[in-house]
Amino acid sequence: MPEFDAETKVQDVDPAELDWVKKLVQLLNNALKSLLIYPSNNPLPKEFKKKFYQSLCEYLDKHDELNLGVAPTQLFYQGKVVHEDGEKEKGLAYVLHKDGIRELAFLKNLEPEEIDSLLEAMEMCLKSTDFEEDLVTLCWEKDFNHVKYLIVDDLLDVEVPSAEDVPDQWDFDRLYHSEIALTGEETSSAAADGQDLTAKYQEEETAKLLKQLKEFSPEEVASINRLLEMDSRYQSLDQFLFILNEILIVEKDLSELKQMMETVEKIFEPIISVADFESAAKIVWGLKRFEKLMQESPEQTDPLNREKIEKTRQVVDKAGEEEGIRTVSQVLNEKEITEFSPVKEYLFALHANSISPMIHMFGDLKSFPARKMVCEVLAQKAKDHLGLLAEGITDQRWYVVRNVVSVIGAIGSEEGVKLLKEVSRHRDLRVRKEIINSLFKIRGAEAGLLLISLLQDEDRRIRILAARGLARRKEKQALPSLETILEDDQFRDLSGDEKKHMLESFATIAGERAVPFLVKMAGKRGWLKRDKHNETRVFAIGALSLIDSPEAKEALLRLSKKRNKVIRQASQQALRRIEYRQIRQDDTTAAS
Image 1 (cartoon, rainbow, N blue to C red):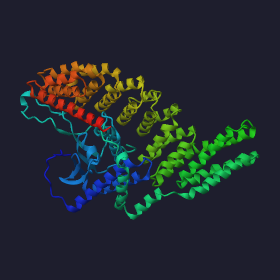
Image 2: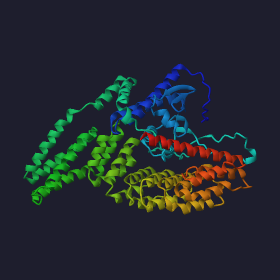
Image 3: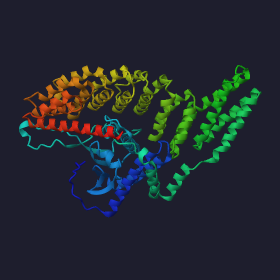
Image 4: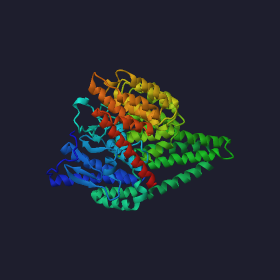
């Protein structure tokens, strides 16, 4: 991908193509704003994302890629403005530009989950007030295959020249790709200071979004309207459940009770086969309410009542067995389902015996949104049944293991670390990456120790992710391991990105304690491999800029007066970074 130059001259662009790109960017903007205004389970954001993805794929089928230049308030296509944020608005251009992204590119064969992940990251940044989180970090962790971006990093430059070769105005503001992408096609699945726009602009933005419905075809508008309208056809089901409940309460004949429950049991398959998961969920919840009613009854010890409780439980258990859950997977694979809330509600209503069959769904389901939905269900259902997830950890299919690892992270229990440790050396890189993502979310010393062990992984990308995770956790027990890595004679020969992240993680965790070590590294001269040595010194200076202390600032001021131009310019740039960070913090404090 060519570097994006802010000074790129305006090129001649076919008007029809320019209009096409403008519409695509508008759809992207609509999707982002809808996420800021509506709750995640609302159908409108899903429709906007779907429309953007379909339209973008049509464009990419013809042009292979779409490159957008990024300015503070505008997006460009071949030098021409295709989007501009509204006045005083922190929108699409703002969220990309503020953390250093200067070009965004979508490539052919883009996956829908990549659009979901990108929009999710942008939404998080616009709603977040956490200075340690930014869009570049979030995108980097998403590991996109078909979304690329160029960013400005004011200190990183892979080929740092020796002092003698540095011109007077050597440019430290080089652009580079985020190229820590994990290899392999994802066949089975794969901080910001912006204010929350919802509170400030909700009514205005809602009106704007509704006007954008003209971008959709009449059929699509009708589909959206159907999703938003109240559906009264379930009133008859509610009446059925009420009558069933009354009959079960008064029924005295065990044979009649058994026959009735067998009839209810047979209802599930035809309902699920037509993807009517909302009705199926209502039936399950109705049965569970009846079971609870019987358990709380003064006559609960009565043999007849105990039989009613047992028969009711058996019906729900049957629905959650392997055969019933396999039917759910088949329906999700065969039918074009975009609204997963009813499916999620149904699966969540089932008993814990459904956990093992749901793990098998990861190997059966073809679509990423469906697998993601199962992850969300298991993250709730398996909280008190972590041991049942062990089955998925030992599965031979890497994508099943990765999804189960994701569930363990979502649960966030320290007990899950034992399961993650079993697969911490998994042969597939994607599983090990997901383990790190999960360890981010689990508190406790055991999670930290496992993350530290991954600093020794055979792949540099995993080592980098582990270092970033330790920095995010402020994991003090990682300092001895990081110091050992930094003091090793081979450290200077590591890749630039690995050195950068190791030093920054050390600075973030150690704080003021890191200042003497980093100053020594920044001032150390080397006669062999001088380019690599100077590169290491520059990264040490960058790490110093992350430490909010007078000692760090004083050290940078001294380094900024060195005769070595590389060290001098890097130190001056680091001081500007500290100043800019302070301005951002002051602005946020004033706004609040």
